[in-house]
Image (cartoon, rainbow, N blue to C red):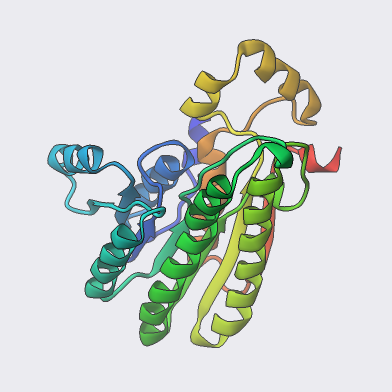
Length: 253
């Protein structure tokens, strides 16, 4: 997969905010952006982890901010910090949570938790960051949806609802912000081999899913990151309002 990281895209001088950027796909996005020369602001939920990462980081182009999108006070404090930055060229709304359960077995607390993190978070961050982008007459916003933003399965009612909503938000923001040189798209990953995937699925589960995917393998996080890198760069000068599914053909089966 090393060749997948050799695409030459220059983000020098750009500042990117990536929510949920400490692990998995978010971390892969951050690594690709750093390689491309961007300064990155990465968010995570746990204060102890954020403090540790800031303490360990030796790269002046990397900063970590704590925010819990399920906590209104935490979100309000985070948004004030973003306003103070004054310049965000690229926003990647990647933070998200999931719950797999039949609708009859979910609770209102489950509904509120997923909506707070998966919908309200991107809505609020996009709202504030787009104000900065409009002032600078430049911006790229990419919302991370999922294959569950175009298809669904039993047990996915809450997650699917939130991801369909973000796809809708993407389309509306795209037409509202296009005249300000701000392009807004979404990327919907299919099954991706993150550390979480590897630890929460048995080898038998992974093999079963692999056989259903036409490409006969899971995506690597860098493959998702490369698509988001393109959409966030000046190579993308006209594509906006799209929810691009990257799933090895799974949703076509």
